Image (cartoon, rainbow, N blue to C red; front, side, top):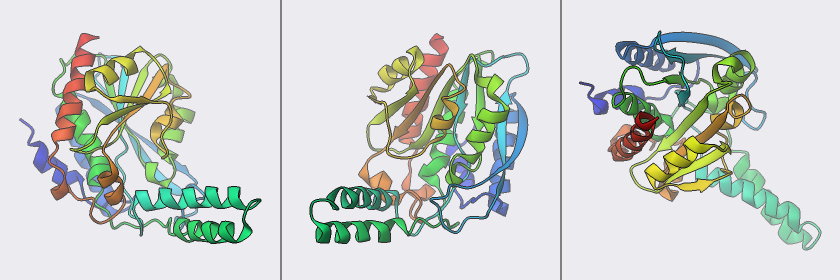
Length: 289
């Protein structure tokens, strides 16, 4: 029987793409998937990081993990990125910076001085969007990796479910875009359930990138809010273009956003109660077909 707490601590380490910890986490995930009877393909790719990030290489090289059981063609793919990144400020602070920039631009025609101050403050905050390797990424996104493994362990082996662990999400969905470009056929007649951050506290939210009946069923099972947009970038955005249905599950609140991408996003902060509840809800829906 899997000790999820031990596995969570193994996964929740700083693991920026290309670092030794990044490779160790990939090997651990392959081990866990193979132990559950999955065949795992490594899709190697390269791509350019998002231009809005600072301190990135000109080109990032990563490895997506694509797993399915040999006799099963997945009708549903469970997806969660496995890389992490640190940044000098939290996700909440970065979002505030973007808001200040937008408000500053809107104020330019009304009050130039106020606009200049607001815009300047926003640009100072946004300029901190620099990539480091100093966050263990417990919430973002080791919590989702554990949630998927918990859900799989509650399903019969012949359930039509596959797993994708994309890489380089933190560089701007580079791995998910490689999947959409080179492995689109995998998702053509399937639903994609992307998980990105599963905290203990907070209400679950289901974000429908491409709406469908499965998303509605999952939202009902999790007593989740249903949104059509999220103010952050997630892999579901890239995969929605090639899937029959695609949605992202997140769980958390302001406290979550205060620690994501900081050194405080560590395993000791997370009990995995949220992961267990989301996994149980997903398993109920997937067992029902």
